[in-house]
Every structure is written in C-alpha cells, then in structure tokens.
Length: 459
Picture 1 (cartoon, rainbow, N blue to C red):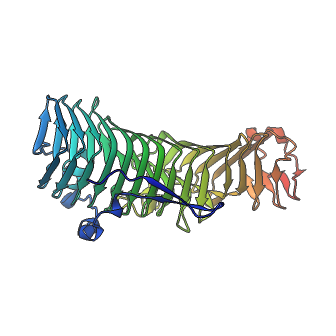
Picture 2 (spheres, rainbow, N blue to C red; picture 1 turned 60 degrees about the vertical axis):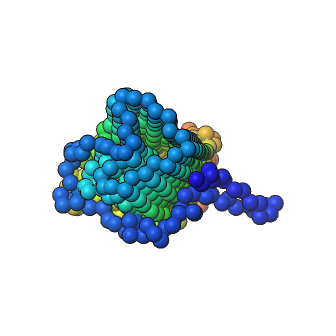
Picture 3 (tube, rainbow, N blue to C red; picture 1 turned 120 degrees about the vertical axis):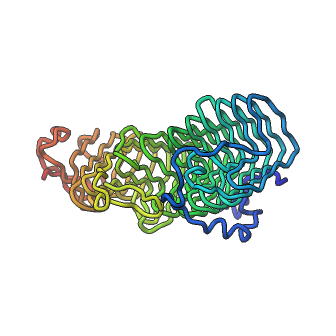
C-alpha cells in the first residue's frame, strides 16, 4: 500500500524555491484508464436514467445496524452498480490500513451522480465511518467515498483517493450527510469528477491538509451544494474551475492554493431560478487562473457575497471579477446566456477585500451588478466597466486603502472615507459618478481633481 505522500520543499537558492506536490496520479497507470476517462457525461434520458433511486445499495462488505473493525485488508469488487463497503442503518465501521478497489460501471449516470450508486464506500442512514491510512481506488466511474442522510458522518484521514471514469468524485456528501477529511490526496481523470463534492439537498464538507488534482472537464476541486470548508488545501483543476457552487451555498477557504484551467477560478451560479444568499470567502490564500479569458471570480444568475482577506488573485486575463446574466451548461465546458435561456437573470455580487493587493478589472454584463469594497490596508490597480449593455458598478474605499486607475471609470456609486481622495492614483484617468444616486450625495455633484491628473466628476 502506498504510504502517505508528503509535500517536498526544495530550495534552489537563497532567493528562489520550488515546491513539489505529489498526488495519486504520480504512481497510477493513467494510460490503462484512458478509455474510462474518455467517457463523456450525458444526462439525457438514454444515458442519465431515472432521477430517483432505483437500486438497493449493496456490496460484498455490508453492515446494517452493526459495528465492525476492518484493518490491514484488501476489499474489492468487480461488478456494475455495486459498492464494495456499505455502512447503513446506524452502523459504525472503522476501516484502517486497508485497500479498497472498485471496478464496474454505473448503468445510469443519475444514479451514480446523485445517489452514490457504485461508490466504493457508501455510508448512509445515520451511520458513521472512520477511515484512516488507506487507499481507495475506483475505476469505470464511481465515487471513492459517499455519505448520505442527516446524521451520517464520515471521518477520513491519511488516505489516498484515485478515480477514473465519469462522475467519480473523491469525497461526496449528499442528503445532508457530512464528511470530515484531513491529510487526504485525490486524483480524478474523468469528467464531472470533483475532488470534494456536495449534492442535493446539501452536503457538508470539512477538508484540511489536502492535495487535489483533477484532469477532466467539469472536475473542480470543490463542488458546493451545501457547505464546503477547505483549509491548507493545494488544488489543480486542469479543465475546470477550482470551485463550482450551484445556488445559495457556502464556500469558505483558508490557506489554500488553487489553480484553475477552464472557465474561471471560481464559478458561482444557479442552475434553476436565480437564488440569493450564496457566499464565498478566501483567507490567506492564492487563486490562479490559466486561460486568457478566465476571471478569478465568476458569478451568474445569482445574488452573492464574497470576501477576500490577505489573498492573491493571479489571472492571465487581467480580470478579477465577472458578473453576468448567464449560467453553466450540462456539458460544464462553457457558459450559456439569456439569449438561449430567457429565465436567466443578471448576477448581483458584493465583494469585500481586506489586507490584499490586487491587480485586474471588474466586468459586469447584461444588467449585472458588482459592488467592490476595499478595506484594511488593501490596494487595487484596475478598472470597472460594463462588458455588454448596462451594468451597476460601485466602488468603496476606506481611508487605509488605495486605488490606482488604469482607465476611465463610470460608477453608479462611489464612496471614499478619505474625502480628499489622496488614496487614489488616477494616472490621468477620471472617475465618473451618478449624480442622482443617494450614495453620492457627499460629492454634491461637484468636480474635483484627483492625484495624478484625473478628475472626479458627475455624469
């Protein structure tokens, strides 16, 4: 069994250093799983199957209303729509120093994606599982570890998770189930295989000291439907954002380092009617996007708040935030707008930045709104503008924060605790504010000079 894989720090010089982060793909036979990982995800009637549970969850190691201790064993099965280890009806099972290997396909994607059918380990119905120092490997399309139901709790530590095939999430909580994980490493090669995923009506995920690497389209580090908390997590999603959040969910990250390769750094949306109450926070973290058109934070068909504390946003595109009347398609590889779905509504997002230095722009499309607040010694170099049609843009600064303009800016609301505006470096650009907005009464429709040659004036 593979021993836990450490972070390796190699000093290249007194100034420069590199960090090597290992994950289960480093020792897996990826070529052998290429066929699995090439399988697409299609939720049509022919391939998705019924949207209600049609199977009795079963497996060769089945514990219902009984407790068990399993250690230093290999548990496996090669069968479709079948788990390896099932814990249900209030059972408590401890799994230590063991290998769990699952092979066999899911007949219907809806059954695997929403109900954990075919998962290697399925824990449900007010049961509890403790998993430590183990390797969980799944092939052909199956979640590694699945928790379902109010009162169901899984504790995972010092464990490697490897998966191939579609909808093969690493840790997967649904139906108000809860998973606590520490010192885990996950790799998935297939499509729609997030490392740490929640699902309807809610999943609760608490992940610390983790490494996550996904290769497939739609495979995020976190997929929030419920509440997701990540602390000390390094994640790389090659063909997905680091976060998908659907609806009024909570996603909170501390001391994380995420790199995203498709769509945006984080994507928060509502797949049905526009919902309100979604929240996102990063603290002492770094978020990096690789694509030329990728924003760090993206919002669509949603009303949300976001907080960035002592956090870096590194984008190739130069875009920090996008808000749009848009959402994600079922293919999870592009956005779709109100032109194709008339029920989609503009996004509204309020972002608060504290103790952070950020470079990039805010872009609102099709009637969407971005409120941007800088506080507690933050600095921002960039602009805010409408990408298409009208938009609501608001910027607020406290007296300790600074703004360096990179082009003329038209704002609905502008507030500055430093009423002399000495905390603005205009570089010759101007800020235009809506004279009829109540938030701008302090300006009295006046025109004033900004440091650097620009002006602050009404429109």
